[in-house]
Length: 279
Figure 1 (tube, helix red, strand yellow):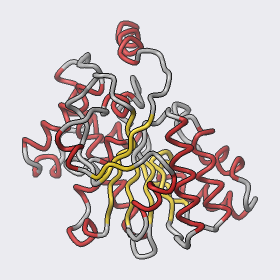
Figure 2 (cartoon, one colour):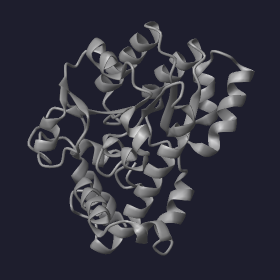
Figure 3 (cartoon, one colour):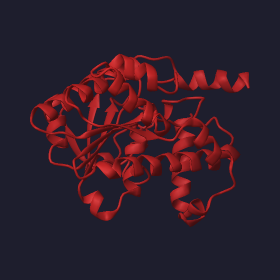
Figure 4 (cartoon, one colour):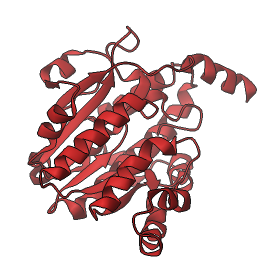
């Protein structure tokens, strides 16, 4: 997520048909095509627009098909904070097979629509797949955001940091003050690194990371933090909404992408304007 003001907004706006996206492999919006794209890869970074129910249904069906054809990947969730791993594991022992109980015990931010994520949990429980809590907590991310620039941030190229800041600005409708962007970029980078670290131990058996399209970007997202040998065994798949002209130059690069219909939602930029006026 990219911040309290618009937790899914950047994923909504990262939607276009740029040259980078056109260079990636286009996939049919079917479970079979998506499952085939994931098959044989040790690490799958599977993007999403967080509130798009059509996309969630497509991805859940594709994952089920992958498992039914013999895959046994761990399923890693951006939506679960890493501090909830013990709760997830305890919930599985207490009530095996009860996805609703696990989500109720371990879920984090109420900004996530947990009904959309419960089918993935149910699939993991049905086939006894590891469930990986992969993200920084909001508190941890805030510590990074409010701290002075870290050694890691100083070691990164100015172009890399600028790309993160530009994505955050556009993802928030260019409404944020410029001085807010560096801290938010540091938090986003910390999330990407944490997600990469969370999936690394499961690469040998296979792992699918469920995450927003911004985190799935090859250039500045989770793949950036994978080692070269890990990257060769990785596929990053953007799951995008059909472009309506907004952010047409903002589609991040992926190995492959699929396009679905847009979810119906209020204008996110107007919602953000109201929030900022309220502050």
